[in-house]
Amino acid sequence: MSTDTKNILVEKATTSKIDQIDFDNLKFGSVYTDHMLVCDYKNGVWETPKIVPYQPITLDPSSKIFHYGQSIFEGMKAYKDGNGDIFLFRPLDNHKRFNISAKRMAIPEIPESYFMDGLTTLLELDQEFIPTKKGSSLYIRPFMFASGNGFHASPADEYKFIIACAPSGSYFSGKVKVLIEQTYSRSANGGVGFAKAGGNYAGQFYPTQLAVEKGYDQVIWTDDTEHEYIEEAGAMNIFVRINDTLITAPTSDRILDGITRKSILKLTEDLNIPTEVRKLSVTEVVNAAKDGSLKEMFGAGTAAVISPISGFGYKDTDYVLPELEDSYASKLKNLITDIQYNTSEDKFGWRYKVNK
Ligand code: PLP
Ligand code: COI
Image (tube, rainbow, N blue to C red):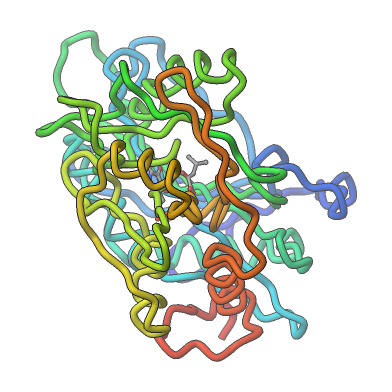
């Protein structure tokens, strides 16, 4: 049966998977809700979005996604407070970035109303799947890819925009040990590093596997010419604290403009934490580790929020970071998650209430 909600066609699942989900032991992104949003781009227009039962997608083997990797995604979370109210965190920024990624990959942009109405309708329908326990949330994965056919190396003429959701626990189980990359690059000037293009992540897997074989959890990406400047931590932006100053690289062609990163920059400004957005060399970090002024390093991104780094490897030497009682990482993580879970004031207007 189809009903019309805000022009979105809704086909409800006949049975629910909710009873199969162990909300006390959630992994990250591995079980999915009952429904998904699907919107097709055909003949130069986005068709009416549909919400359908979560299901596999059938594609022709010549679909361009398989051959030329025209594919982008976003990562967002929904939170539910004690009153059952549902919140997103700065979702319009995700929509904006989605279209920045789309443009770079020659994918048609998706209108804000399709993205936001599609997402909020889906969340209201699957709201029982939004965990309430702090640290857990509903991870939301909007993605868009070339479903059009043909082996010709050119943009497809058809695309699919999908939103799928996964009740999720934390991304990492503890602190991570990282390797400062000296051979491979995640991105390059003029490339697609600033876009959330699927291939950026595929390109990270092999160097990360090599790092894992050496006993590290993640790679710290450095600039593609000299491997001398710190750029990102795995699939996160990176912050380094030297003495009491927090430093992060400026965004560029090569670095994703992270929403967590820019929220941290706003919070440190508000808290008067000395913060610098500037190029940060590996030499400076190694010297700071040697003289004891290196206090903290952490990754920042939607999935992990803030992921503290326990130590790093560089040119066959391991450096261990101190354990701090009052780390910036834990302070900032608490401030951000309190806003996200609606347990604190939202003075920057970052919360977005889903159920009106
Ligand atoms: N850097 C990369 C490469 C990412 O994939 C992400 C994740 O989205 C981030 C940084 C962090 O961005 P955000 O804070 O918007 O999730
Ligand atoms: C993030 O949210 O920090 C991410 O990079 C998402 C990740 C699962 C690719």
